[in-house]
Length: 266
Image 1 (cartoon, helix red, strand yellow):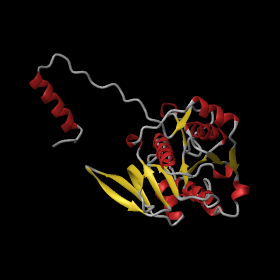
Image 2 (cartoon, one colour):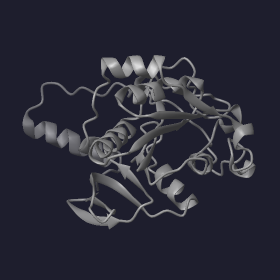
Image 3 (cartoon, rainbow, N blue to C red):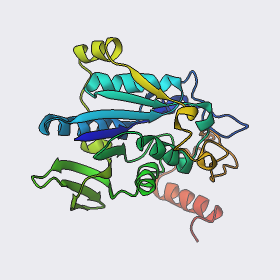
Image 4 (cartoon, rainbow, N blue to C red):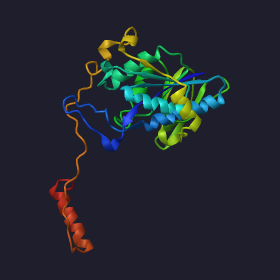
């Protein structure tokens, strides 16, 4: 089985910086991590690799050169190959342009199963995984909390659904998005770290390499239909009003009057 896990290196959410001109995240020089849901996706792939003979796991990421670190970490966890889609032409992509570019890159690789995280913590849209599946005309299941291969070659997926779950059987090839809270990712091993940095190469694909499969009209900032009017970091709340020396009844009355004054209640 050939499994591809799409991962994203995201900025540490306590260190987010924004470009005031393009309204995009400034990633250079910012502490980064593998997106938590994507780490769970790596764990799902490695569990399948352990249970299904002759399984190969490839990790693919689209991002700047520094995203190679995330791929190295995935290799140290036990993945076999790493591919980085990297070019300034892909910078500033929204979910549509990102999914279009990644889907184009995936056409260059053999796959039976594509795994993505549910969503990225720097966007929280949960759109890229399903969009990739649509670009590739693949069946897909989102919010997976359990994944196993059946004897007939189909996947059995338990899909989270509000206060219950769906049990779905899906034929390969397909795409799934997984939940970080459902799968505890393994740690990198010492041997895995040595192998990831000394013995394994990261394949880098730029725009020129993908130009025959990628759509230039759906690439980068210019190919992104999403228009961001303004982006800003979370602002600290102003100092509240402290009401002292009130008994419980007076405190309730004061709160109610404040809520009425703000038209929150009538």
